Length: 205
Image (cartoon, rainbow, N blue to C red; front, side):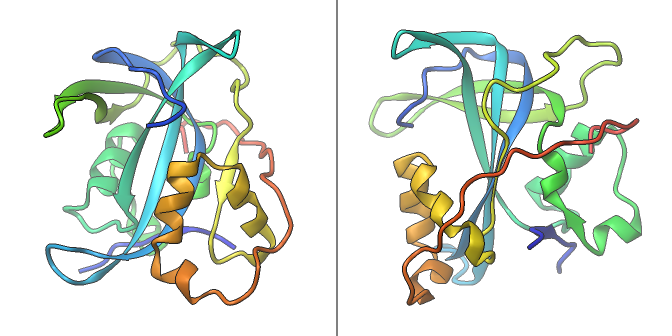
């Protein structure tokens, strides 16, 4: 099933340096519906993960690109963070037709420039956070393929639920806190992540 954004009224990671980085989106994760603790309303949440081909680290004896993520409410309201980041990423605003329903699976394989900042948490730890997502200048060289397999996880698709076991444990925990997951009565159905081909065009998605 599609993971549609609409206009509406950790562990396994190394520290990503602050600054601008080439990045490729390799995962779009449906986190399910959660209650907003500040407003008390229910919001559909989604996570994007990028790999940084020019920032690497040795994991288990192998050099791999660093990865970073950002969570969003699945909404294309004009004030939503997802809208602002995607329009900056595309380099142009959404059309009215796209605002009526944009399948964010199109983000898989899309290239961009991430601005990363460091923030210090209440526990004193420093965290890398995505401050902005912008279009890569025309002609910017990128690898032809991502190091990581492209991942699309949709909680509404029962054929993909077994893929939950392949996600980072802390992402699994977020999904299991969702209203959607708690309403499920059956054991996760078998399937696995699918490597998806992404067509290239004038826009990154």
